[in-house]
Length: 409
Ligand SMILES: [Zn+2]
Image (tube, rainbow, N blue to C red; front, top):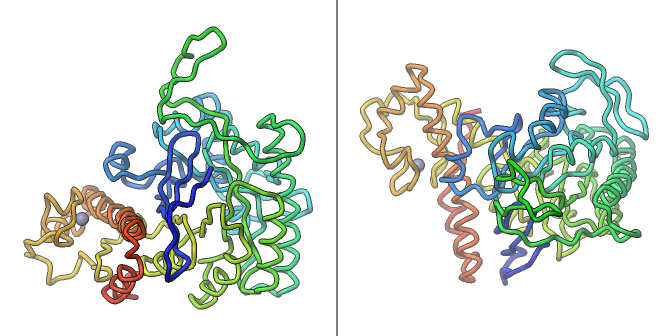
């Protein structure tokens, strides 16, 4: 269930609240990426301390390793990774097309070889829903075909047609699995506090229910169409007709120039229902997130804060900072002045630089904690500004101050 709480008078930015099985998510929201059922370098306790509202996991990776049987037997993904707040799982579509060795794409799905051990596997829309039901995520994504951004228009058109057909099959599977009578697809969410104890028919709480697997999962559709406005619009309109609980903009941030990405979002958002959450997949740099919020996007995920941390790069309000820089060797200041994160509250740039130079794991962990704090605090500030009706001024000031540097990648 998604509730719009406020909209910005000067842009399409919105303040909202999304209720899912394991909790309530205030939007705009950033979702740290936990591809292999872990957000790299940090523990669930640290993620809670950072106040991450929801994290991601990836169906493709977990399907290949450790496999559904293991995670199912261990009680689903929440219990497996000891995370009791919401989880969103990607359907595996993007990874099948980008990581696996493709064998054959048919209208039923994709035959591929695992990038780990070469095993011959198959995922289609029905399999993607089944995988995500076993994982037990709060939000599951429809299986989509994500062609390269510079593919020929006719190939992107074919991917759009297939993505829409697959989304319909995912919606049928999802509704059937949720035991929704007749054809109305929307799942009514039972409001339930995080960690609420489930009871069985005898009134007894089942064993090991601290992170109860609750079968109310939301299904989001994914809009494809590359940088072609007509294809994006067509895909969005056809998916909107399915009345799914939310919609994602896919096939962005896949190597295309930034102007193409912004254009793809510009043409997609107006074709999506106002009353549903919008998720820009794999985005992005801090400036891009602010630009996307201005365009009416509510949800974001990106590997950048954890990935660049492992190269010793920190995000700050003024841009990125390479902590391995020679001039920081004896710098007594924190990574960023006035930052409330554990790294900045306790350690100097000089110490963190020393750890990074010495190859100590703590160095990577401290920069990761700072970067996640930065990425989680950004939407927090956006939400405060939206609630105060002050987002226009806030976003202008942020964009003026934040200078993107290109030298860390
Ligand atoms: Zn910090």
